Image (cartoon, rainbow, N blue to C red; front, side, top):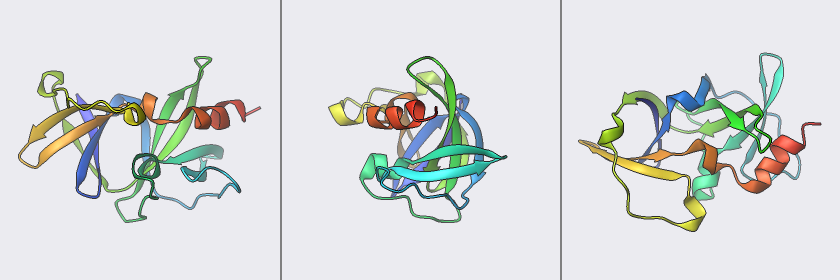
Length: 151
């Protein structure tokens, strides 16, 4: 399986490539007044407006650092009604793709109520990398903002 790897600080995370539409370089975003702090803004993507969520803020309560390695990963987010909507994730230090077999992953043995998006882990020479379940990381409040605010 192919994964996109990124880091927050020294911690490595993996997103299954099947969840990704495209990865684009960071671009200027239109800020949204009074939006929750994890809403980074709106991206003009080929003439369409795409909401962008700051994955660092969701995971660590701090905004992503804008670096040369910061990217926006466009994903198909499945709304409650089953409709697939494009959403961007602002991610720092997204620099490579890696391959792992499903059998390479093991349970982290840590299950917290507030981070159900953290999946299984894999160990290599660089240490531990943890899968992120994209479908579970967006808060319910954001689902309401992103999906029901489109009318």
